[in-house]
Image (cartoon, rainbow, N blue to C red):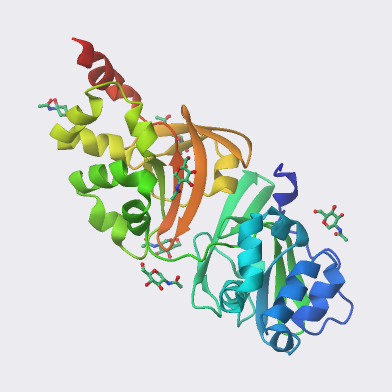
Length: 307
Ligand SMILES: *[C@@H]1O[C@H](CO)[C@@H](O)[C@H](O)[C@H]1NC(C)=O
Ligand SMILES: *[C@@H]1O[C@H](CO)[C@@H](O)[C@H](O)[C@H]1NC(C)=O
Ligand SMILES: *[C@@H]1O[C@H](CO)[C@@H](O)[C@H](O)[C@H]1NC(C)=O
Ligand SMILES: *[C@@H]1O[C@H](CO)[C@@H](O)[C@H](O)[C@H]1NC(C)=O
Ligand SMILES: *[C@@H]1O[C@H](CO)[C@@H](O)[C@H](O)[C@H]1NC(C)=O
Ligand SMILES: *[C@@H]1O[C@H](CO)[C@@H](O)[C@H](O)[C@H]1NC(C)=O
């Protein structure tokens, strides 16, 4: 899927604004590409509430967004009303939140109790793109009488729960990273429930690709280990949309990483491919298939091992 449709310029208003829009459901019907969402609100028992006056702002995944959900997730939602309701409520805000009120890394509390993280990225001097928990906002600010429909191109699933550190310690593919983060003393930073971090998270397989002795060497030298790890951390949140529009990004270590992307699904950070994006309360993990070594340390870490 190309990103072209994600670009949102500041002055772009709702496409298909209703003339006399009333409820959120009325607006969804006018937009026309929200039939799955409307039928799911019925299944979840939220249709009547959203047919009322609100105020509500609905982050509304379009039909295509539901098609992009893995089939097993979709059937799980359809067979589990409690989960479906939870997921839909994580898309609904009981307030009016037009895009003019949005700021980068703002957290908007939802009806379900989870927050929606807003990010704003520069596409060019003339255009920005807006994301909500990493989903692109493709048709902003369709007015209801007391609220808005913000159409998004992905379903915000799974529900955001826990910190970056929770993910690192519970994800079986990141157990080497868990060891390394703990050794480097970065656990408190990544465990704070608030934060705006991006962590490029190498899988166990990525660590296993390092030349023999490098990981052991790092584990014996906390300074070097910290340098390598902080080269994997950004102090801003970059989801796939944000990465797509980036060329170089400054890491916490101080040096830049280079981003090359041909689509939201095909992103390289230096020589590492981004495999998965995982949103957490304090930022985002971009799981990568290769450990990033700061250029200045390459010789010391890799070449010295042979001598
Ligand atoms: C609905 O979405 C599909 C796929 O994104 C698109 O091809 C179609 O033109 C859209 N229809 C409307 C009415 O926006
Ligand atoms: C979040 O995770 C904790 C455990 O880490 C669990 O107890 C809780 O039920 C989860 N909440 C949701 C909404 O999934
Ligand atoms: C771990 O990696 C494998 C292979 O890439 C993948 O199939 C699996 O879903 C991953 N597990 C988690 C928890 O991400
Ligand atoms: C994250 O960024 C937002 C917006 O700039 C800011 O208000 C918030 O304090 C930041 N959070 C932390 C923990 O730095
Ligand atoms: C540990 O790593 C630092 C930073 O790379 C390096 O300057 C230092 O010489 C290393 N110490 C040892 C004992 O190898
Ligand atoms: C790092 O990237 C920033 C832009 O993100 C740029 O302003 C800066 O000059 C770069 N630094 C180096 C050392 O390349």
